[in-house]
Image 1 (cartoon, helix red, strand yellow):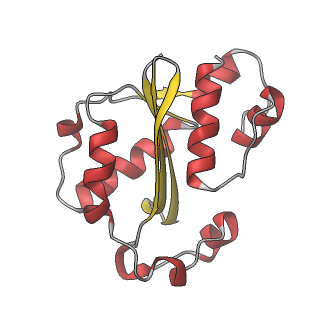
Image 2 (cartoon, rainbow, N blue to C red):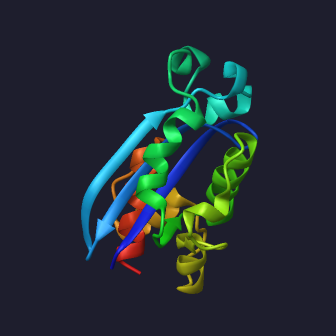
Amino acid sequence: MTFTAIDFETATAFHPCSVGIVTVENGIVVDEFVTLIKPPNNLYSPFTIQVHGIYPSDTIRAKNFLQVFPEIQKRLQNRVVVAHNESFDRNVLAKSMAYYGLDYADLNIGARWECTVKIYKAKGLKPTKLSDCCRAMNIQLNHHEALSDARACASLYLMK
């Protein structure tokens, strides 16, 4: 199995403050990438801070999405992309790209990604939050830490 798993944590709406990416080649993790991302004006919703614990002070000196994008692009372009609740992460990526004038179509990835929520729901697992799926499949998780979430998603996809 060859694919890339991705997870975004957001500051507000679709503006990411962190991304974790795990690259799998023939069933083996060959690359991991994680970075903080400075959202526009370094603005955060109190709700998102409560979810992931990332504060404006953590990203004040971080690169913005446009500056981080080359690292994201080289890991996603022409790949099968997997996410837990793929519509969320796909929208974060697509809307962030549009915000910075980048064309999503240039990535040459699916309009819909592989979704571990849908896969595990189809297997009869309920509920299907990432933490629930990881508990059921005995996968270690530090929930809402982007790289940990991407690793967990990759593991879930490998075990499907």
